[in-house]
Structure formats: C-alpha cells, structure tokens
Image (cartoon, rainbow, N blue to C red; front, side, top):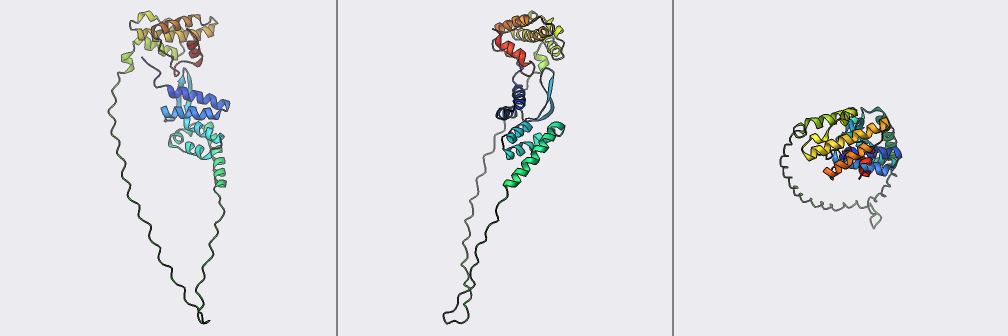
Length: 267
C-alpha cells in the first residue's frame, strides 16, 4: 500500500504556511505554486497530518506573497480567482486581511494608471489666398487613405485527443488487511496504546508487515514522548521497516515532522 502519492500538495502547503510565519515570501510563493500544481481546488478545511486541520487556500497565500513583494497585479489575480473566491469568505480572519490588502493594491494601481492628457495636433489652415488678392481658394480635399489589408484568418488549433479512461482501482478496504486499517484508525484517533499492541508478524505479506511496523513505530515514538520512555522501541521498529522495504517512507499527511525526522535519522 502506498499512502504518499496523493499527499504531496499537503506537504508543500504545510511548508508554505511555515514560510509565511517566517516572512519568507519567496519560499511561500514557491511552495504554494507547488501545492496548486498538485491540487488547485481550495477547501474550507483539510487534514494536513495527524489531527492538524487547516483551511486549504493556496491562492490566498500566493496572492499575499505577491502583495508583500510589491506585485499588486499578481496579488489581485490570485485573490479574485474562482478557486479562492469560493472559499475565502468562510475564513473570516484571512478574508479581512485580503480585503485590506486588495483596497491598498487597487489604490496603488489607480495612481499608476493616471497619464498626462495628450496634446492635440495644431489645426490645418482653411484655404490659400488667391495670387491676385481676391477671394481665397477653397481647401483642397485630402485624398482618401487606403484601407488597411484585412488579416488572414488564423487556422483553427488542433483539437486535443480525448484521454483514455483511467483504470478503476480496487477499493482500499479490499487491498489492505482489516487489522492494519484498524491500526491506522486508532493512530489517527490518538489511541496509541491500541496501536502498540499490533503484532506485525501476524501479516504474511511483506508490504503489509512493513506498514504495520511503520504505524507501530510512530505510535511508540509519540507514546515515548508522553511517558518519557524514549524512542528506542520506535527506532527498533524503524530498522525492521527498512530491512523489509527500504523504499518505504512515512506519508506527510499521516505522520508528524518529528517522526519523519526520527525515521530519516535511524539507520
């Protein structure tokens, strides 16, 4: 089972939020662009990892980064996008900040848009005086200007080929053993003692056994911090995971940065 393929945008979004707290607006712009590339749909509330829930509004933060960097046009473009406008109203504190900054940007752009009035060309004289001092000759009409050539019609762009239908995936509950699913539910619900009682050796399939060791290691790491027993048991499970499946990595949507750091440091 691979649980990390669909969570890249959550990791990018989490990093973007941390960069916004630090005032690193270039990093905010980069991380939010990565998040939008993976998932452009804003949401009022998503789970980033564990029990951490946040509004998912990458367009708002991308606009805020542009505003902080002096790009008012880019900021207004992000804030007025349909994805952002449909959700930001349900997040009052972010909506209030967006409204203040939008008003400031509109004022700046209005000042930049003012131009000096153009000077009119001097008028032409009416007619010329007759050589004998009599009545002036009437003005001669100007020759008609040639019509500009009509643009040639542009060829229609080729129509994209329809995408082949995506293969239907087997439901997760049919691919994952029931005890392993129950362990993940207990972990997300904060019932770490229940997870620690899980026996990975009861799973015959190596991938399932590696996932069982991984979730038990995460529960042992948190329990060790709560009761002061340390992370030795968690490290032992991590080493067993690496022996079974060296390519397995903790999903950022499920596991905290502290556990992922412990996992990467344990060999």
